[in-house]
Length: 160
Image 1 (tube, rainbow, N blue to C red):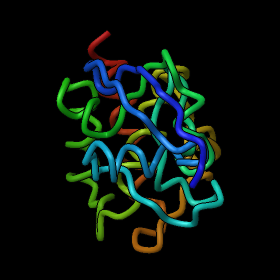
Image 2 (cartoon, rainbow, N blue to C red):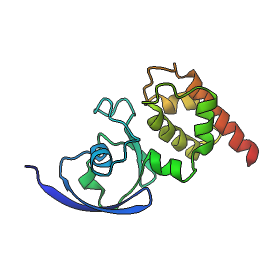
Image 3 (tube, helix red, strand yellow):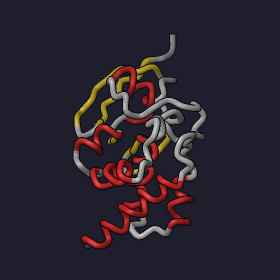
Image 4 (tube, helix red, strand yellow):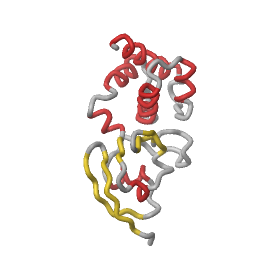
């Protein structure tokens, strides 16, 4: 049996206290212990982006971060940023542009796109492609995803 660690963190705005195995990955903690199934487990090597979540405001691969290392951290998942309405316009653009086909990669794509638009609100298509390149999709060919992110960036700029 692995060593157990007590942690207290904030997940999607709610305080969580848990006892976790020292080697338990964040994505497993979120999915199996907290029942937050929105982020997916893909490659388990940090390559595909399906497990992308935010920790203290920065996106990370949930399969590479140990839950035990997050005592005191703030974690936001796709459920959290969806529930707050933070990405409603981005979700609408993904639907309108048919950027979410099978949906497996979509949570990670939305997390990455939200991160890009937060830091580079007027990102070019090339910058969008570069930022999103760490997230794999087998269905869309990426063009629709880039279109959706670009559409959202332009719409937000027009409102500003």
